Length: 306
Image 1 (cartoon, one colour):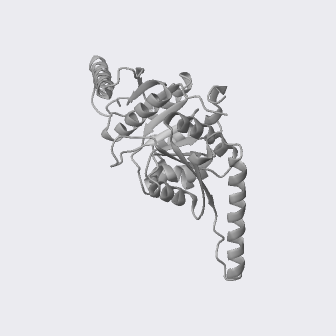
Image 2: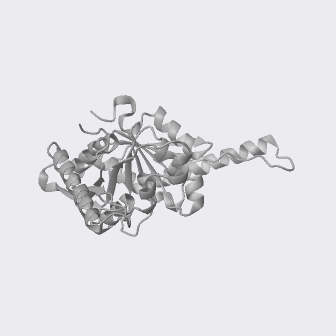
Image 3: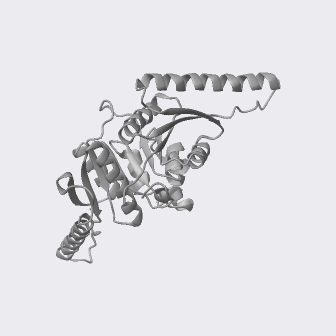
């Protein structure tokens, strides 16, 4: 099974932080010969709580905001300097994340690319961000990108993180498509948990448990790779132990990965917002852009994979 990425929605808030998303979009669209919809959501202008704002002035301010946004999008396209890049400009108004998701759905997007500011602390965990919201609820896979001091984006090495769940297996289709288009190398990373030390358990027994988990992980990796579509020389398996998001980020940094690809289990409810997930954590700490594939996003509309 390979993934078909024909239409990319790049969401931008026109800030410097979103420039990384636009650059990543240009890279992926060029590699995959995909159409691009460059989207900006103009925030709704709040009405004053005191005083009076004439309706015609209110409308004039809204129209001016749309004109400014359109001009900024035109400059972004012009700065790309690639006449073969098929870009359609699109303006929406309202709350950013819901509008991005609605446009991706209505446009049958195969991929969303969005910038993230890499927020930290309790406010991020409790309230999330536009990128968090999009990753969790998107109808298709999502690439999150933030500014890195590594120069223009490239795609020479992909870190594929897998726990062999259905979502992770769905993500492999995107790894294969991107690696094939870019001729990229692939690091397959499987993280096994470390047994929790306990004074009631003999250290030797803990060591045996750790070896057993490692051996099971190796067997799963070997079984998975038996049917993978890439030449074996381009896939390097790695079985590591520890906290999943930290180990994946560390491996991607050590190997200078250009993109991390992984499945996300699409948690829901208060637990999702309070505790997050491996994918949620990784988006915040990764040293490169992250492509997440959720159970619903990997099979959106039946046209993302064939």
